[in-house]
Length: 232
Image (tube, rainbow, N blue to C red; front, side, top):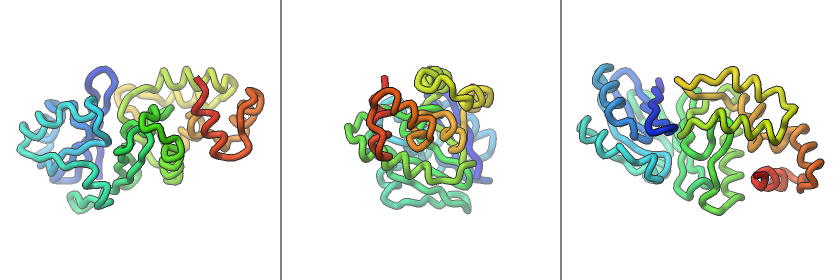
């Protein structure tokens, strides 16, 4: 199974997951570019779907299915089914409420498409208002193998690492993270995130030390999560 990233608007990222003959689109804002790639690779677009229903992720999907003769499948239906058979391979779908109540993550082989749940270097805003659910969603993604590649819904890497450096100015992982950053193919691994993304570092001893120095709650894992989420 392969994945192709498409940038659109100023920082949005959409994706095609595909095999030898068939593809699925996730967040199809780059409709023309996706359609051209599908044609050039002699692929058939089985369907288009989304990581969540914010307009910046659903815009362009109508144009994409019109250009390819495909169809839209509601991602909430796919979450209920949990797996998608695609070109002899299998794509999994996880419900990850937090950024929104309807957020989903797609995964296959050694990569995942995380939408606005988990960005490269940060996480999404908790628009759902449910921090506990968001925490549980992030914990479920952290359980994936450390070399799993993360393909997110936006490119916020430079801003995110600048903010991470404010929280942990002595963290050498931030510079290493930035050296690996490629604006033409934005991705990272779970291990990268555990090294530099402050929102996944709630069990790291250096982050715990930061929280202690700031007088923030830190006794339990969830207290540390809430404390990090409150930093602005």
